[in-house]
Image (cartoon, rainbow, N blue to C red; front, side, top):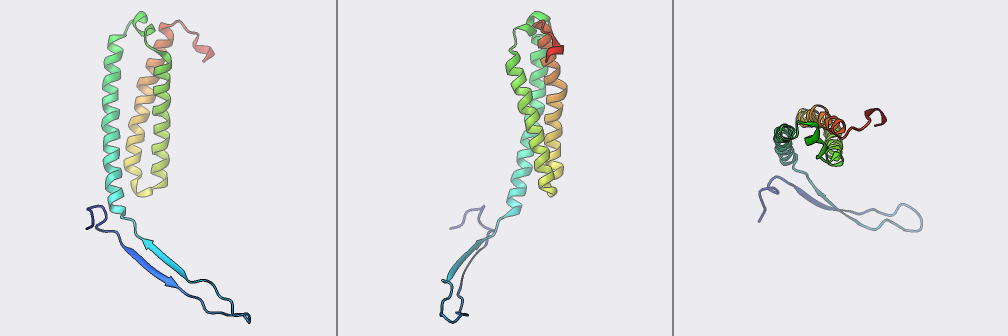
Length: 147
């Protein structure tokens, strides 16, 4: 019995034999061929759902960053936040932005979906996390020119 995902996939089997063409009577061994189609509609649907989840999570991440900034809005409060944790989170979001842009360029039919996810990751990285990173540096009285 086929599952829902395999309903529209096709499978072809065949064999190929060659006849001798030289004086020795040598020929190639018979080859068995198998081919299976890929259900691109299913992958397109799953990619769109993935991008909707990334967009929702990015929006939720912005809300949580704003809430965290409210709790540590003074210099002494922001000095208690780990600069490594915020820096690592900012780097991961920057890389995710680049990965989504690369995937959108690679798969042209899904460019709009991947570009939307990349835009939201860029907003989280550039506007919220980097500002928070610099506020933590000021709270820790770090020299920002050495970064």
